[in-house]
Length: 116
Length: 115
Image (cartoon, rainbow over all chains, first blue to last red; front, side, top):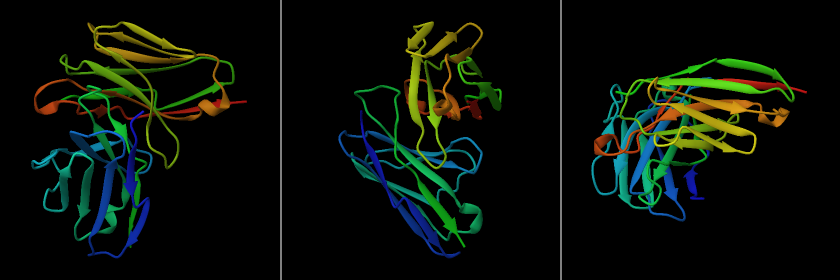
């Protein structure tokens, strides 16, 4: 199956700093990448959808100026949490979609963000 | 937009028994319904999926049924084993347009299989 990696797997930062999370599709071209946030004991909530070379589409209630998404190539998307606060502490998961497998998404291993 | 409701939120069974988790969806245009198993701190793993042109699909101990008219689909696990214990999520998505491939997840079911 298609493989997606995420880096870092865990990050701890101070309140007010910015954190960048990378999501890479290793063996396929991800024409679309999705970013999810999952709070403890809750479901995955879609934050934004990004297509290579174009601006991300954010879900209602997600601040686009706080969660910066860049999808510069077919194998790399990044999520930057700017001016992080403790309430941003969560499990962030990316997934990639490919035209070869319509509708299917291939998930990264997730990044645990803790903001102190 | 799409809304997916999942029940029950927790399910406890004895090893060897069957487990059934049910989901309903609101968007009649949804045409892809995957089920994921997620262990603590790990990524969701696709365990089975079904598309709207099929009513039932089976893979060894796991089966999924879809009722398009009623807009609900169910996961069936037979002969449960302790290693089946995890959180299970259903999801729905539609093809085409700006919502292409966008998954809406259910709330999740914590399945516990007791030895």
